[in-house]
Amino acid sequence: TQESPVVPGAISDSSVVPGAISESSQDVVMIPLLQRRLEMLGPERQSALSYATFFAETFTAKELCAAAQLTYEEGHDLLNLALSLRILEVHTTEEEELYAFLYPVFRRLLTASIPQPHWQEHVRRAVGAMKQHRSRHHLLHNASLLAMRFSEARQPVEALRAQLHAVSNSLASQLEGACRQSLSQLHQLLVFWTEQNAAAVLHHALPGLFLEQRSSAPTRKEIVQEQLLWTGVLYSLRMEQVAQHKSHQAQHVWCSFLQEQAQIGTNQLQMLHMYKSLQPLLRFARLDVNTP
Image (cartoon, rainbow, N blue to C red; front, side, top):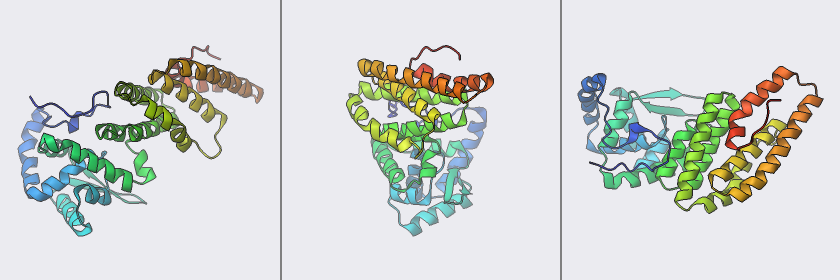
């Protein structure tokens, strides 16, 4: 059997594992039809488009050209042909045109066609293209998937940066399920890289990464979130003593925050809502606190 090159402990995405062609009844019917569409690209263009399987769900023309080493004209000819064959679809935003596979099966077929020895080179070039050309807005989109891509390319700091973006997005959404998931993925990523002896590298990079996340004038709640996140990250990196010291700071900041909210007249219902929205972070930081 072919061994999957996906990095253990990274966020799972079965759609990009080589050879992982779904066997659902619908796919059994569709695969031969969609395979013929890909073959109409020709071998060289099909090979170039395979780099897109290592991006997130959407990608830009610049990213594909950089990864596949195509000229501007070659890249746009390929994209236009793929659009005409209904392999890709395009979404236009204020900043850029974003391309995506019309069906997930296209991604799986292209990935399965890549020889395993070439996998790491494809990942490395795709990740390099994303770092060079992806706008900040686009970088935040599908951040957890990007974290997996960076892990596959053996770039732990970039993986951590992307996953912290994912956590930031989930905290902004105030959806407990999304927060729990993004924090769980962050924990898995940190544990994996700790086992790969990269904990010191990540710990060294953390201050800069947190500074990137911080707004120019952070609110008290954002400061609480950062303290709790810091503490949880340290525990995940197995830096127990440092994490325990940070935990005392986080506890103090949390209590001060609650006292401050009470002083400015925040009602009990609002306090409960704040507590609930921060619950995933409190658990991540291993802080055992009572409901206000």
